[in-house]
Structures are given as structure tokens and as C-alpha cells.
Length: 187
Ligand SMILES: [Zn+2]
Image (cartoon, rainbow, N blue to C red):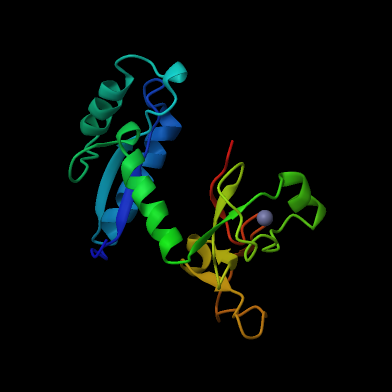
């Protein structure tokens, strides 16, 4: 967690060989990582066994290798990451950076589609609850990198106004349930 280098990731599901669109996504992610002097990692999303095709993971890795998309470090297998995620979620909870939320999508829709922090200080338990991250500077907008460089826009906690950075063409509003974004849902 102390390595601050740029880390690019490609995380295919082993449900078949990579099609053209997936290879383009892999290439984009690879080039972005290299352009930032970062590392590029591959994680196989093997957590949906009914959709998995035997041998597909090997095929995908061969395809990446064939096209010169050489990854750094070991390939990660998502099915073996549960303990790491559990530890990370526990850490977030201990730091007071997450909380449980029982709001339904219908409720969030009813309050305008943007989560209003309803459960933030209710001290709810884990049962039938989503885990939300406590964000003090929720992202309001982002800039399309092609137009203006990768930038985030935030509600400053003091003014709850939008801070826009100069020269930013291509700004796009975020929509939907992005404040205190849920990291894990009961479903
Ligand atoms: Zn809630």
C-alpha cells in the first residue's frame, strides 16, 4: 500500500477468449500504465463459475502475451482475493471510513438519484446492508482526458460549491449514486 506508482489493471472474466474490443481495452490500459511509468497487472475475474469456460483463462493470458501485452508480477485470481478484501474492509471500518447502509435503490431514486448520506451516522449493523465509504469530498464531475487532462471536481466540504479548474474542456457531470459510493451490496 506504500507504493505510489501508477498501477494499471486489466481484469478479464474467463468466459471465453478476448474479442477485439477487450483487446483494445487491454491495450489502452497497458499504454496508459506505461505512459505513466507505472506497472500493469492482470487479474482474472474468476468469481462466476457458471459463466466460466474451461481453459479460457489460459487462452486469455496467451492472447495478451501474443500481442506483447506483458504484465508485471504474478497474475491475480479474484477467487483467491476474498481474505485480502475482507481485511481491507475491516481496516476501513476500524478507521471510521465506512458504514452500513440499508437504503434501497428505490429510496435513492426517490431522493433524486444521488445518495444523501441517510445512514451515515445511524450506526447500522451489517445485516442486509451495503457498505458505503465515507467521502468528505465526493466527486461531482470528471474531465475527459482527451479534452482536458484527468481531473476530478469536488464539493469543497466548507462551501458545498463546485470548484472548477481552469482550461477544462470536456467536463462531464457524474450522475447517479456516486456519493459515499457503495463498496459492497448485500445482493
Ligand atoms: Zn443509506
